[in-house]
Image 1 (cartoon, rainbow, N blue to C red):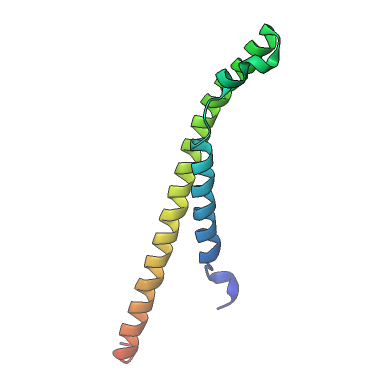
Image 2 (image 1 turned 90 degrees about the vertical axis):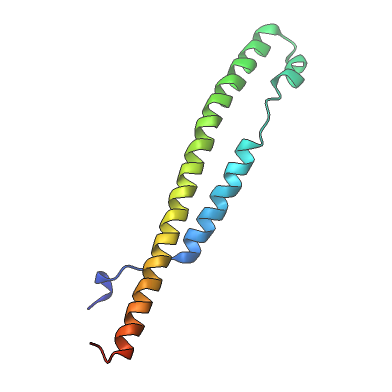
Length: 103
């Protein structure tokens, strides 16, 4: 058997990805709407209105992004758990077969 017929799972990459996605999720969830606090700095009503529109759109897209990041984090976490379980099951089966003389 060559290396082409083997699945190699990078657990470090999956753990890092899960941690990074958790941090991204936390940052995006923690962004507050500050449009009212800074509305006076724009100086012109039409600019303030456009900025308010931008912030409203951003809030909608941010909510969708937070959900997608959470879903991706859950998929990565699930994949990691499943690969770890499969590795453990394979290890246990191999050890059991070794104790039974390969029978």
